[in-house]
Length: 192
Image 1: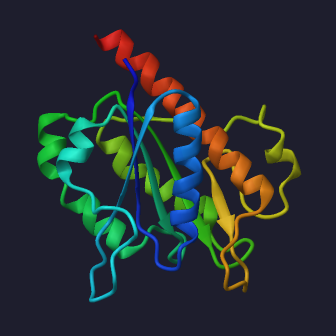
Image 2: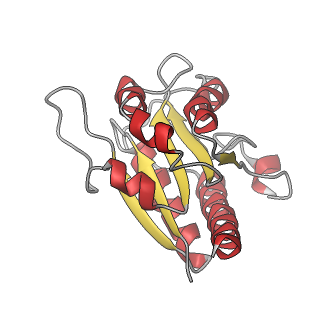
């Protein structure tokens, strides 16, 4: 049976949502089900183009990709507030042993992508999730001059208004989605 991979993100200007879409392609290419959800904004901003996440979405998923823009080397306040609301899942152990990974976008090169990816991993570790990233066997990690790290997919938007992902960023996000889906499917089969 195919795994359900939740792709959960907060995106302010669309770059993190674009990464989420590419990760979903990779999940689907690995014959798993991609469930894309966004985190609600804290203030009166419009929501994302995908349905808003519920705690039940987390409980039901077999794997998780979690994305947020860079905010001074950390996740956005909206993403942090969401994780702060998951204590009930932690108490029940709902996320223990589920594969997970993180993705991000910054406005500048060296804008804090890797620090953000590492800080985003902390709530996942506290929930007992199994972290995965992108191995160096992916050639784009050696070729990228923008985003892409072994910690997870990333994007560097620079000062461009269109937030277009580079070819390497797209390929790394798709590869990450495939890897996460394969791991989620393998672990789901072992549990059943």
